[in-house]
Image (cartoon, rainbow, N blue to C red; front, side, top):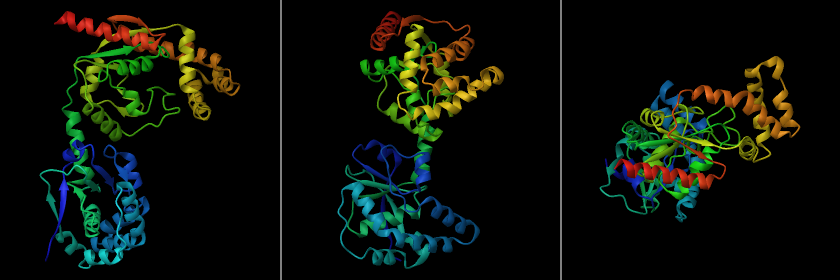
Length: 387
């Protein structure tokens, strides 16, 4: 039996090479849950097809699953190759691709599995195209073999597939080193996120924007106008942010252990919980305007707000509050709505949660850039005094 060498790279090699193109062959649902940074989804099977093949594999026989997958690949073969060519800038040759597939698969599942032999690369070429599936099995090995048979020698597989990449992320998160940390805290609407983002512009690498990574503002209304992500995607984004470089000090926005549905990793949460607290303050009108600018930036946000406001009404007291907040939103009485939310809901909850907390300094956040400059200078002075 003649083997076909399938060159493979590790997840670490793929992540370290900025010029590498990563093609994720998993289903759209698998890709949406999480994927390698900068990866492009070119699914070999759609979600329904993958579920069918999986059921055949476990409930019938692996050979039946293989035969179903083989038939599906023939149906979408031209589109698959064209999609990969567009994503990579490759010009696929005008040959009978179906004949190439038959040549690779004529021996059946067992022969194909034994024939396509992974060969680890010592060094990953700068212009490599790394293709992967869930665990680096036949899904990706067969596509790499097909592409290389068509003359696309940049194609390599990912050793262990997404599963090995995910293990790499879990290990990194578990061993995360967090520098001495400062937390921006303050009442809802003081502009903590605005100051944090100005701070990052002034001192690149000084902050991690947890809410941006999670796609959530960490409150009942926090998902409005945003796209909350999964736990796995959050951890991927966190590692990507850390890889971009951090300073010797770190500034975060004060959060609870959960940001939306995302749970902060233990080491990061411990650092945030024990962080030196910086209080941001500003006037009530400024706070209201910050919230209006943020939550009502797009007309579509109103429809997202309504059910969340109804939830808050139920918490405040269904008899007294039913329809009151939603009514103000529908009537475009935004300032009255925000005033009621701050006075009757958010401020009391914040003060209760922060009871007993000591603040190392207090800074006016009315002008986010000026506040960011003061935060940066205060941290630098504090660090110099401790040396």
